[in-house]
Length: 104
Image (cartoon, rainbow, N blue to C red; front, side):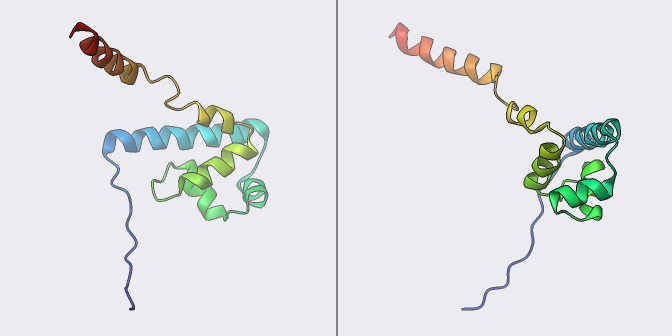
């Protein structure tokens, strides 16, 4: 059976797009602070210069793995792992649920 698969891209709303753009700008500044060119980042990650450029612009079409590869070269990948680590809202919701069970 031969199925054709169409490439789907994630829907990124404008508010979230600005977050990606900020991430890209932060990555670009981190590269500049370290004196790394796009060519050097591309060589160290195995990604193309076009992909590096897209990352620096916060393009949503670039895989999260590629962002992680660049962050790794910059020595910043551990900061990425901290995303959603302290889930304040989730903990409050969990506490509310737990408190509701106790009252019964």
